[in-house]
Amino acid sequence: MKIIIISFSDFIGGASIAAHSIFKSLKKMNKYFFTVHAQNKSSIEIYNILGKSYIYFLRIIEKVIIKFFLKKKFHQSLNIFYTNISKKINFHNADIVNIHWVNRSMMSLNDIKNINSKVVISLHDMWFLRSTEHYSLNNEPLLRGKVSDYCQKKKKEIVKQANVFFFAHNQWMLSQFNKNYPGNKNKIFLCKNYPINTNIFKPRNKKNLRKKYNIPIKKKIIFFSAQDTSDFRKGYDHFINLVEKLKNEKNILFISVGRHRKDLDTIKNLKQIDFLSHDKICEIYSLSDIFVCTSVIDNLPLTVLEALASGNVVFSFKNGGANKILDKVGFSYDLNKKNQLINDLKKISLPQIRSKSYKSRSFALKNFNYQSISSQYSKIFKKII
Image 1: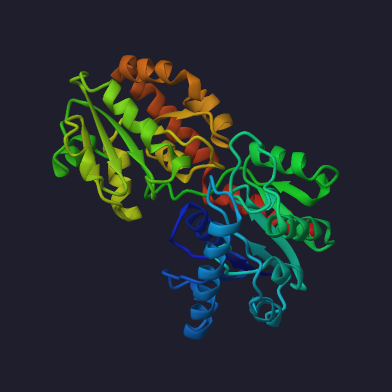
Image 2: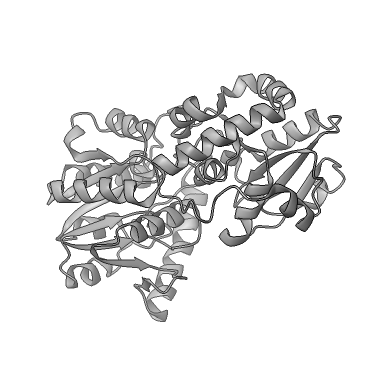
């Protein structure tokens, strides 16, 4: 079986990192990983310098169209401009082409239609379920207009194609697909969770790590991480609100990893750390006790899975795919129950944290390992072929 996996990158953003982890999990398959931005040796940049320049040009045009012709709440993508990527893909004559996050004009909707192989689209956000938006907070009506209607029409055509199928990595996304495309249950498969490298994200000696990063040894450490803290969807303002509400709790320290904000430097119970690579951020998970996810809407945040693998107790708003996992091993709250979340953060004891930490790690080892996800993918690929 010959597999081509395609994603915008193998290291920028949660979807791309997940795509590369899935690629690495498929150890025994004849496989290729195509990207626009490649970092790992196992990834192949599908466009040369000229091709990349063309993609960047298309991206500028797309941003102009979105700004002037579409209402914007969440991030949007169009993917309406032709590239020659389908010719490059068809040249390899693969059995399966597994498409992950391919926005930023990397691949047009018509390009997808022109792929000859069986196509499996992994849903890392809601973009394929909406017209142009990557998320919908309250199932708002689809954006209307010539551009939005065109994108939605093309997506419906793709869903109906005999050679196209979809992956959901959690029950929430599966149900969202079935709501948006009723009568197409035979086109989507559930592959539970994402693979996490539990040899990188794991419990370590907290005392030694806290000394290394100059973190108080005896305090309760609550951790937050987001690649883009300015993204409304990630709920950074909600996190800062938690910090401010608990500023008088002397036994609590918050750590935030992401874009540094100078206006928050005066908050005494918050330590800001600039964005870190995987091999560094795993140590921040390990020295922390609690991970808090304040996203208002999300698919299945890798940060939550990494935190569980690291033995963190996870507190989160109910925001999508993580809800079912946290019902078993963590804590999840409706957005209007923020005060309850704050009180629980304050009250949870160190013995409770140690007990929950063990359950988090055990759950991750059983459900996020490479073999589990690889087995699910392999079975579904064989079924599709």
